[in-house]
Image 1 (tube, rainbow over the protein chains, first blue to last red):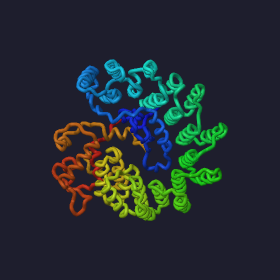
Image 2 (image 1 turned 45 degrees about the horizontal axis):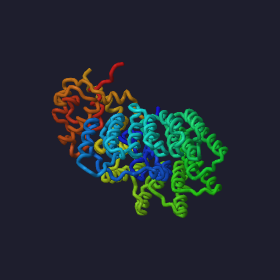
Image 3 (image 1 turned 180 degrees about the vertical axis):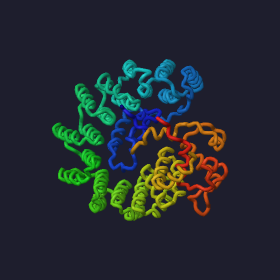
Image 4 (image 1 turned 90 degrees about the horizontal axis):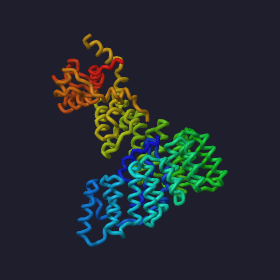
Length: 468
Length: 93
């Protein structure tokens, strides 16, 4: 339960709000690239994070970023003392602390270090330093109870504010402690937490927990004044669509109307994506029409989803029509649009037309990505255009692109069928070398292709050759 | 994406005790996984340029390779996995 996406798990230190980075702290990592990420729930994140970062005192570029190398408390204290003795300029406590935390110090050591700093220069303790501590202790929640820090903050004259709540919840979520985050929102932070924190938490929960338990949390939180809004509903609908639960999505949609919310562009995008996910791609047209009836302005994501859905449903003529409609509306088709369209063509077996579209796309100044090439290569192999496929593969090598599993398997099978075994082995080498796939999946696909190719012959032959 | 069957994966990557004739090929190493051995043989072919220059799908075995590939002088690349499979029999349940 509560799986963390690998990209988040590897993030060693996530106190995103402390650094004034405009990029969102945890954009949902794009899932399997075989599906174009036609919908980006993170679209409204940038606004959110922009708001989030403003109340925080952004530390100046810390000069002591890599000051502390060992996570041992006594070392850090002696380093700090010598530094304080050497310079007269005031030291920035938050960046010192940050550096100590980054060196791998335990939260309680960090707290002791912080006490040492503030005892030597009483003016040093500020909200930023507390936030560093808070973020660190929430990332390692077993070591130090975050709520004890809130008392400490209040005592020092900095009662936790919305930024503290957001920081704590995000850090706890990335440490995979969703329950602790819920408890914090219900307990000490209920008064200060804002919509963004709340929606972040619900989104996380909806992704990794069964939907019924999310409802329980929503109920509990609404008793402390945090009520679901349109963003919450959008996230919930997105989550249930991911689980292919269309009935629940319909129920949520009705609930949202009852609660007095009017669907916006994002919600329509999510609904469209939901239909694509449950393989009712034809429905996207109806959603689009309803959007137009309601007077909601479609955005780029809407059009991308639309083109994706129509392509998947095989309505290529309509999908192509929307390429022009998009331009009329001032949205230019991007790599996702083109890739969706190409994959639709490949599905129909018209890989050569898709290849032509690639040229058209590059002419218009749109750079194809790994996913585009993978889609095309697979389509070409399936349409028995191996020569063009090998040419495309050559281009992929020159651009150091990775192969996806399905593309690799299809390509190797096609090569083996055409009796280009040596080439298939070269592709096997490339895949391992470029780390596109694990050794096991690369080998399994190769072995399977060869096995089906020569099954009867080799099997009999080698059985006879073996000594009894 | 479909995951491979864990048993099949284990069969490929678990270390196995090599029989003595394979040990000579691996330079005295006594344990190796099925997959590791396959990659070892394939890189041996590449390093010593044993592929037939006229037909890259054929491999002209040198003495070392002969000792592990049932004594054949020439094998097809396509049968390489099958030939190596014989050295890694399925474990009886």
